Image (cartoon, rainbow, N blue to C red; front, side, top):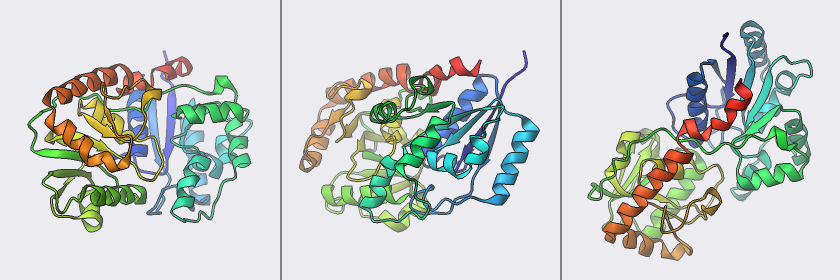
Length: 343
């Protein structure tokens, strides 16, 4: 049987994986490969330091390159990451006479993400109106990688149910190597995008890192993060999944920003007890069973100490988080519903 072909297009490189958006695309790439597809990846160069979709403009040279690639490799499926990118090259992706199926890898609807842009007072010169976004979404074959809130919004906006394929936020396949006596107390995963820097600087103030006895580890782009968040009692290491077991618990506290919160699911998948201020019940995760929830932001320090001092609680959270992840977010499980359309 002849293998099918997929073209995956993103505004960030495939590797190294330094953000949630990249993580989703990279694991989708791996999943398609395991499904015996021939997979081609194309990056749309973007140079914005706040978010890859801000001020994203149409490039004639890239459009020509994309058109040639499609004509030469004749893909069965084209996966496009973000509605902004879909809109920018809609004349190709949404051509009425296309011979391929166009699948949006959503990773945040633009008009959900824009709330964050407004909050930090950043202007996007290639602004996408709500009506424009819905119009192009209706022309896709399928949409994946959306939240429950976005799912309801899409259906209420006229997107057909058959266009929506439920996928989970994907994670790598980890082994549970959690150590209750790890060297560091707290792990935080951070890209060098502005929303992550805002969050971590806010957490530093909340936990008074410079005066704290807690040992704080940040994984990310060491060179870039050191310039922006360096602090006494805060160690920065290059992002590596092997380093997850260097900490006793993972911190997923958000004061601003948007996105699929990939870092939460990554830490859970590694069997790391997670402390978060988000309600994760929509994913089937239970407070005090799979993770520890902070209900009031001023209780962050108290909740962290409760977790660190309770050996049995950390062991329980670790075991339950890993078991849940293995069934739901390891990437072969997260993308399993795609198999129906890939046949």
